[in-house]
Length: 424
Ligand SMILES: [Mg+2]
Image (cartoon, rainbow, N blue to C red):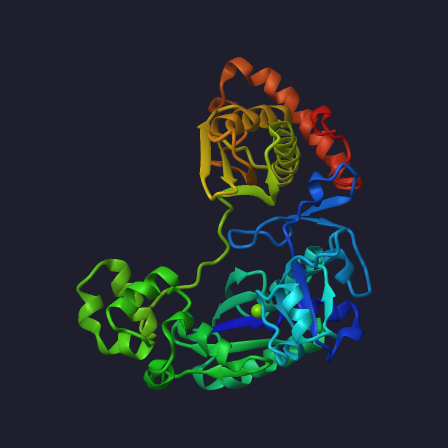
């Protein structure tokens, strides 16, 4: 059988491992666009790559260990409360406070709610510990996200022993890691994921093959982990409103495209989709959303700061990109993009210059305000010099080495160590 493991209100549970006072109380983790990296004040930001893979982005984090309500961090100087909640404890949910609520709404529904700032470093560390914990107990694993894992138990645990196995796993994880989780089990990983949802919080649920029909019969389309808003609209337009109705209409799907056929089999729990084990990272990017900004000089300063962070991540990952992209979003939702492929050994000055040039190309509406900038690098290659342009190779190698030593300093003293002139 395949199992799906999902941490219960993970960010809140993580905070509770370091602050037991939060136990049993309504707690919400607040989020707002992290624009701290653009601050003129130096902060001690670090990069965590330990747990990052194809599914988990690399995070830049700041050391923090506050043990109080962080609500004031979400109040602007003008007294406005900003930000929304990314995770809520079950105690908060009892008041109707849900993920996606604004902090203002949350306070109206539940005035005693404790708001915490996210502490990505802690979450990454705990997620990594859970991954190691699970790897020691399950041979074939897939990480779905920071708080979600799949395991394939075939040939490892007999079907009849699965109930005991997942119940033990749940209790052991709570004992060892102090983290509550829920587990679903089924023949298909998609059915297992839906079962986890039903099992929450701190529960287990198995859906045997003969139970799938009844299990999906009344489930709304959006409960299926593969039906997004777009597909939902298409299916609704065809008069299909539940997963059970999809199951009753194989003719619509089985003679259609490969992905339609796949969707049908997955919904019915008869697919054989294997778990995807660790994949190599194919790209890395960094982006930030901020208050609308018209000043191009300030925007370029942001590009320089973002590229410094990106450069550090590339050095840490020992990756040599050959494809670079800059994307811009304007406040009326227009978009600008520019990309380039260059076979040069990367260094921080090279990255900065390249991304600044791409920013200028991507910035097609120079009279509009910008609300988001994204930089990304991909098409990684070996540092083998045959790949790179020989003309600049010697100079590039020198710069690359300099970037490496700069990064080791930043590793030690924080990412704001050694900034560029243009950032100030
Ligand atoms: Mg979760």
